[in-house]
Image (cartoon, rainbow, N blue to C red):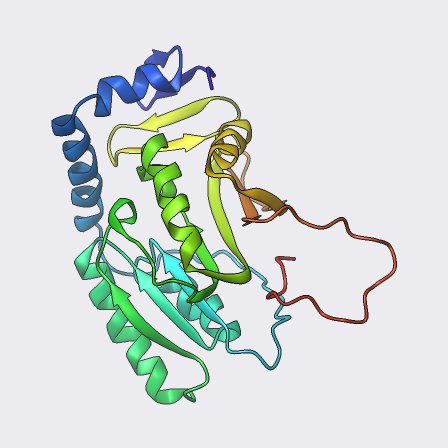
Length: 254
């Protein structure tokens, strides 16, 4: 993975390895990397500022579906998307006041809704330290947070998180895309990876691409945004004839 990249000051790096060595090359630097990232978001107000529309088609009728919202922030994705299609949603967020805001909002939502759709657990733990319960989740949703992880911690997280998936479950990763290589944001300690960079990491994780979609209608000056649905098993080839038996998995992104 030798693609060149830049940081937010315009400095060029010959490869990701060069950048990671400089910023996380020893234990002290790596600890500071994650500390600075959390500190940045601890200074951000816990409120909603803009919502991007998303669709998720529910194919899990008559099954108890559970999702994990990674990097949940104030619970926007859980509240506006996941809780509509899953019976239970757990939230994982390292910034405590974001998670407190999510808990307050979603517990109010729980009181107004039936017990069939609710936020259940609230984990104040960083991605790089989290290990899920075995076989709990149909979907592990990772949105706009994986850029804070080093490549090695990216791979380690997904390898640990695999045990949390039910048979037939999958990961959904939604992230900004660099046009090539990577772009390092020195302020919030995050990296925006290119599509090929992500696919190289997926291969290292032993994950297979089930489907992917690029978000349409974003201003050209912004990063592209792409969603990946990933499985631990090689996806079966889809034939033109529709099967009369529904697959044992939630429906995929439209």
